[in-house]
Length: 89
Image 1 (spheres, rainbow, N blue to C red):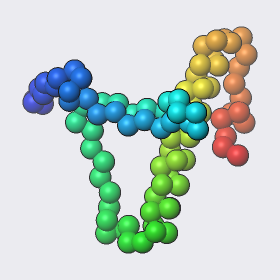
Image 2: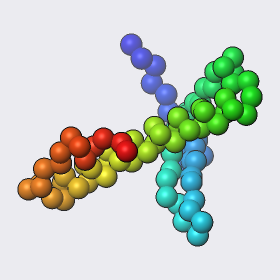
Image 3: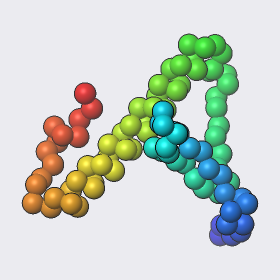
């Protein structure tokens, strides 16, 4: 059985925000006991870091794209999304 963990609603919440050029939040990661694990055996230089952050950007782009497609589907149920609409360019 899993252990139940309690958190303080505000004090224990982690918030990471990406702002646009105007300082307006465009993306936010929030949660409790968030952990970020980096494999430093494979991150040895600036090129490795660029590759890792490029991969992270692609991950978040896909998540945002899927959410936008779901919003479009809910808002326009008569218009079906084709598989081609979901493929990255």
